[in-house]
Length: 384
Image: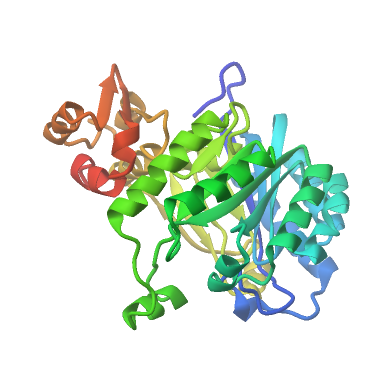
């Protein structure tokens, strides 16, 4: 998608820092624990990988930078500053470029927030997960509520924009308990919240507990009710949903994540990073040592770079875009497909009659009642 008046395609940049300094309860990168890291060597390697992506995306205008991965908030601020500065040399920056860093709510990481803000980070996404100590223990988190809220306060002092996430529909969590927790979350005044229902993914500790009957799944009707409560309270609190699980004040939406959901171009840098640009999917070597070897051998850390078929691009754009309240432009989807948009028109008519979706001109949206059934709706609506 080209920015109006610039002639330049928008680009989001994802930078993956793979390391955790101790066994990390927040991610699956425990094989990447390092007590010491050669910071100068890693800074140079990330800069080289970034330069390769810049060469492949000439003429793009950078809309966002997102530092994610293992524990990116423990990346040296000098490295963060160097990467931001290099991005500004390689690309034209969008006015007010969004520069986000993912952080765990620990006192160790919060102590670095001021330095990271001076390095150029202007938005932080904090993994609070819950405002209940018992729930945090169930989720396997290392922090408690007090430490998490101290980190949140520090973030709000240092960054112009702050987001945090919570998980709900936990075992035994009733409607009143979730209402109280969400009201407290809204009272902190951040401009963005990510609110996710607990899901049981294969291969996780939760899946093992569920298989042994030690983790009862949330009753679907109860989960639906909690979802409705979430929509009502965030709307009333001035942070309406703009994506199925993400809520923001108008203008505070995550520009970086919108690039994914709107199926815009994004470049991935660092071990394990994915990208989609120039009609191709890229995946970098996940293991840090393999990524470094590839970088030395090829000048980049890419393990796979595969063209995406036009039909697949159209399907991906539909599956991502229909998560958004704004929906998708079917004319653009048809352009991606090189023909008709891959929509089941009979299913669309049924969904419109049921009040679950709406087509206005070329704009297709899943309506709020349909978001409760999004997976089922997408399976019926999108012709794969």
